Length: 423
Image 1 (cartoon, rainbow, N blue to C red):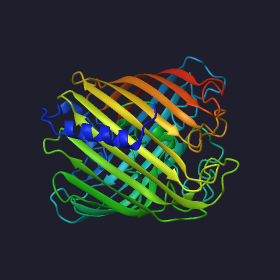
Image 2 (image 1 turned 120 degrees about the vertical axis):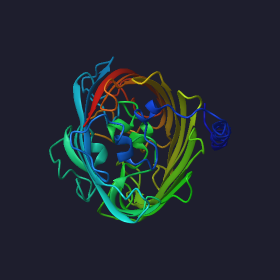
Image 3 (image 1 turned 60 degrees about the vertical axis):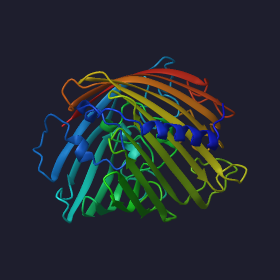
Image 4 (image 1 turned 90 degrees about the vertical axis):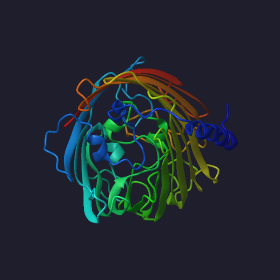
């Protein structure tokens, strides 16, 4: 089945209408299992923890977490790569994904003007998702800080100052991209494994400025100028425009957001033969709608599209797009179950498969990829410990190379489990 823009718009319209219907207030336990939501302050989410290793001030916060797990692959590939992944990609062996530390000073909570800032530090297998050209990497994109390290490394994904009030402020520096639904930080993702749309289709971080404005209690607006995707300094720097909004229903039983980044980027990220190596416009947007269907049941719809001018092997515009859908059900104060079904299309075989050097599941992977994930979050110690078991199936339909079992199969099945300890 091919999804047209008209079909996407129709579904989004129906869901938006449904989201305006009345529903009960979310249960307080939902705050423990909060999936990433655009413009959510991380310190606010961290306050659900039962205890902190370091005493927290009203504005000064120091906290973090440890995350490690295991992914079992029924095929047991010799390379131990679970297809073309950038995260949780090692099959049938333990992985230490994140030792994460946050140090931040919040803006004043009384509405007055102030100065804040934040620095994040990450060590583990997820370091690849948090690196920037001209920072951890050289301007040409080669390893610098983590030279010689393929599986474990260090990264500083955020380092910014912030001035203004809670309703109107500006960030200057290095920060996570607001374009998309999932993110690097483990506690703010429901699943251990990631969606393809997050791993391959969008930016992870930006360097630049970002203004945030809250004109009403329901609406958040942001906009700024950044040095493209994941780059402080690169061989060809280019200003990109980053903008978007989030609107929350009055009863807080639904919200919707849109974010976009556009500007010149390198045309041949995959290093494919026949694709011109130059600079041209790349645009990526993300639309999200979340609806609390009941006081325990939440549905999330995420549509995304990316376009790279001069990025296709035929000299035209390369496209990548898809739809992610999530369903979460809160069982009780300790348990929540969820599912994710994803369809993505790498229309020209230029995005999926860009990962670790020794991975044999290489691009081009032109075509459609589907995945279904079912899992649970168990939090026996309030917000401080989260255990995430999951089952996942992936399959591919396209004209490119086979993406699984070391390039020999078009499907795979996996079982995963990780634990996050927040401190």
